[in-house]
Image (cartoon, rainbow, N blue to C red; front, top):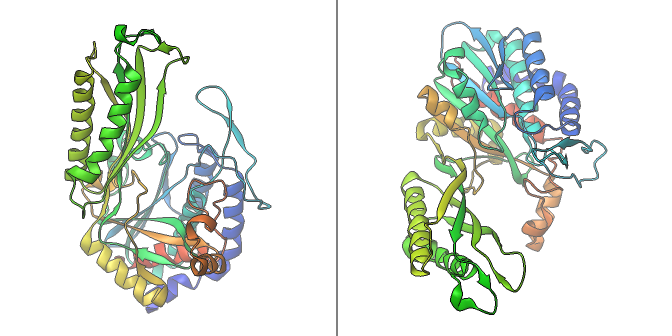
Amino acid sequence: MTDRNRAVLSGLAGIRSDLEDLYRDLHMHPELGLREHRTAKKASDALRDLGYEVTDGIGGTGVIGVLANGDGPTVMARADMDALPVREQTGLPYASTVTLTGPDGTEQPVMHACGHDVHVTALIGCAQLMARATDAWRGTFVALFQPSEENGDGARAMIDDGLTARAPRPDVVLAQHVLPYPAGYVGTRPGSFLSAADSLRITVHGRGAHGSMPQAAVDPVVMAAMIVVRLQTIVSRELAATTPAVVTVGSIHAGTGPNVIPDSAVVELNVRTYDDATRSQVLKAIERIVRTESEASGSPKAPEIERTAAFPPTVNDEEATRRVAEAFAAHFGDDAHTIDLQTASEDMSEIPKAFGAPFTYWGIGGIDAGLYAEAAKKGTIAQDVPVNHSPGFAPVVQPTLDTGVSAMTVAALAWLGG
């Protein structure tokens, strides 16, 4: 551990208990995207108490805190705040029992099923350590708390609300995510890390008729079925075997009864790719297949193809990642790893893109190490280790929080000189 890291991280023991309490509190009080008012207030209050210059309400509930500490680089560290409409099944004493009214007016259970409560707690902890050890570093540290990552619109909301004019331009943007790896694990990856994700809703049109008179119909159910089968050939026959991609049809809706051929069918699908070229190729192939199959079926009306959600690929800057990886190796030793490609998706990269700044995004583990080791021994990791977005996902408090605080702090100090 460098003297600078030691000087800053020496304060962790004194705030550990408070951070653990904060984490449990956030876990018990999850909030959905763009409604993170309580969480945002926790973050902004903490930053103000530490002497940060705080701007809140950016993009609805976004918060930034700026701590200027002399000449030097500017480092921006980002955490996402929102939870998911999932009913918690962890059995923890601090499990969420929160329900909120959804867009359709129904009550939805809400849970921090993706670990954003860890991210918020870790960034608040890092912000505390940086503010209390200003003799050990020089530059500007910016803590950014982003809303609505799960919906893919939170980063854009902050940018559209003037983020780049309300925060100093960073020399680097840092972010992390807790993942289903053993707690204490830290993993970096240069280049492609998280996939792009595009969700599409496709409506194909036919001509309805009685089920006993198919000759009078153009059957959109058959049309949709042919499209679904044909879509499976994009990855297997149009991409090189070394190019990772996923095309998943998750939903088909058509008709109201067994003896009625409907007028239309709706197909919903999700696409995962790792670079813009592959993303463009796959999306163009989907459009080609849908339009051609519709025409081949004699559809009386052109299909409608609507993109309902889009996340950019997360491609880490090579040099920034190298610097962080070296700092992690020196600090975490054997717990520092190169992490595999992940099929999860993020909108965080919109923020450094808006500033024209490089970024690096890494993963930390949150699963009890003993549970993970036992599952690995039995070959049952997929069955026994809860993953993000599942009702059983709740990172163990420690060493997850210590790792998250330390990782963000060590990464920031790799730029902020003494």
